[in-house]
Length: 187
Ligand SMILES: [Fe+2]
Ligand SMILES: [Fe+2]
Image (cartoon, rainbow, N blue to C red; front, side, top):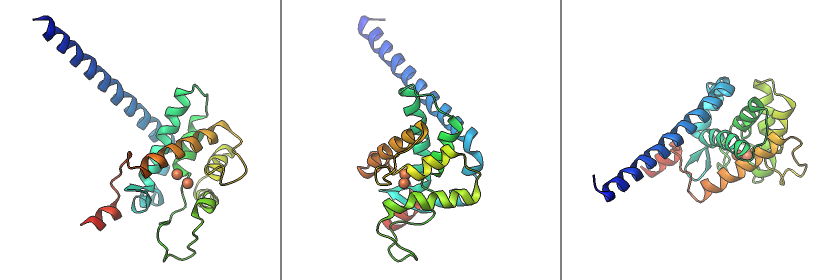
């Protein structure tokens, strides 16, 4: 084998090793989300959030899962010790407002969705789940500084950061979803 062929082979091996590690990390993150939030993931209301657009083509369902994933990534990258169960469950439920916030014809439409939806999400989540104080802090304060009172726990700060990051990526279309309503519109 020539020197050039060896170099190309080496590069290919490095690349496939990089992909393998990436997919392993993704699988591990999905496992943690399932382990801590399986009941939420399988609930009717959470599944229904596939029908609501968050930003761009991303559904509230995919957005919430992504926020849970990036919350785990941020806590690891920054080396912040967290209660993983609270972090994942709070992230999955942070946008549990259960309506299409773009629909101006819906009952109780409020143009100030950004300010009010954390409170609505918290009320809805409390009806279905026994929330810990940390989970309540995550859901109720994730829109800080819009919600004025800052988060109290590190888990809530992390979810708030992950939410802002995911929302930006969705708005500039670097994170794309497969939202049903958007897809129907395009046909
Ligand atoms: Fe939100
Ligand atoms: Fe969000």
